[in-house]
Length: 299
Image 1 (tube, helix red, strand yellow):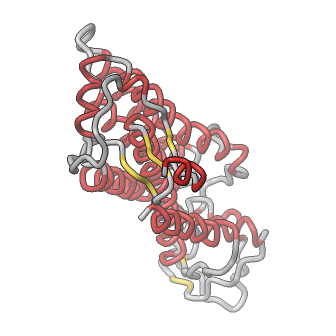
Image 2 (cartoon, one colour):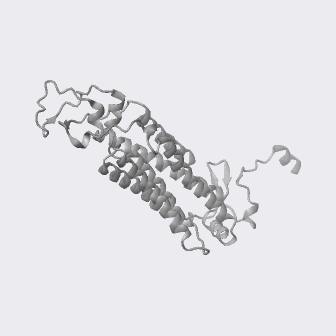
Image 3 (cartoon, one colour):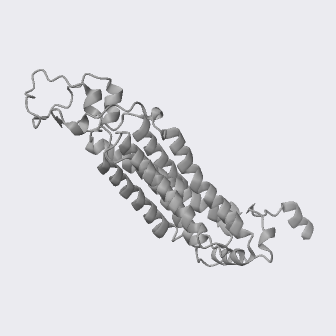
């Protein structure tokens, strides 16, 4: 079962790579209206020139939930009452017929692994939507610099079916054809909502009733501002950002509720007896193989 999950994860990463860095999937060429004001916004520059660059975004949205899960699980494991609950819910199991996983390590690997899978799955959904629709960015006509020669473009409502009349930089034009849905909005809300679901479902604190709401709302607010930044810089339409929010939220809710069951333990039958002191249990233990010499000496 472990190897099967690794194969699925590897296939998901590979598909995301092909969508992102190759031309295997061609973008749909969409037409446009002459002098469409919604497509004539000033060119905001490359993505690296954005206030929230892709490098910063990807590092934050990948590291924040990972750090929250890692710190939260370790903290709960060393709290006596919570630790006993985890031991009951998370039995030490045989994984891949090779080794035993401690409940703490198993929960960390499962929650972070599901988060990583959802991150790549969201990226695939976004890229697929951009390739299929080919919706134009607000600055498309600015970078397209269309050649209207031979096209009746006297009226603003005249639709140009031939989308290949651009004379600008083809790499920039290709990027301008991938506006719907917004990738920044989808990935940011997915990461924020996944972390929020983990915090509200697992972390229990009696010292402050406002600690969790402030942390959760702050995380969601950061994702919301990321979407607004895309609109303010004319990189996406409002509809692109809204669609990205819906897509990322749907993936996070599905994984959080249906896959990790609100971050609760698995109530399977124990395969190994519970140790007397869970803190003395190693994170990973390999099965003991009896030596033939020991067998002969015993006889």
